[in-house]
Image 1 (cartoon, rainbow, N blue to C red):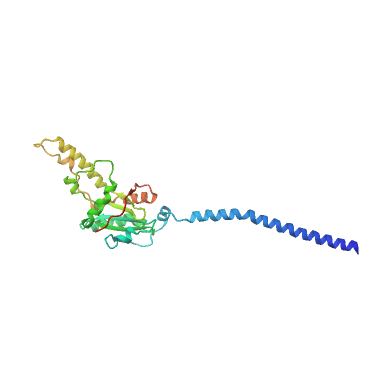
Image 2 (spheres, rainbow, N blue to C red):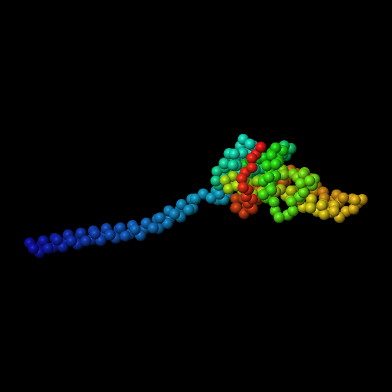
Length: 247
């Protein structure tokens, strides 16, 4: 009986030891496999974090039209002052006479960017809110000399076709100036130099100062390229201390 009992106890001891060793090895395997799982979870979380650029460049427009609202004293607070972080309002500057033409061209240029919920589109009447616009543009002045306020070219300056991308939360804006406006600024400077060199009895250089007619819609011909740079974050930003009131 003793050899038989010894054999039975030996078998039980070996079986018990095998179970314990197997249990420890399984727990070690689980511990080693957990860190990669956590790293993968962090990587997935990092990939799914929304960014302004990726979201706006990848989404397809859901509507067949562009919703453009007028920026007035009623919508000013909700569409700009209290705009949620990460959102921007792209505002077109127009007048009563150019409203129809510019809105049509504006819709065509920005339609591919309407798939994002972070972009909003509005228009501002230059006839009603010129002072508000000129106040903002003072923060976008470059190092060039500022024109005299009493100069007739300054008083007649046409801002129709300007587009401002306004970030209400961070209090900055990006500025799109139509190509025609740039040409006019260069022409005004050349005309001033020419006028100062001419005598009173001579012709005033009409051919050098004339810009020729240009369709109104042509002012926004490069807006889509500007919008791409806006989403890339490569445009110059002009910061302001606070948003002025829109009377």
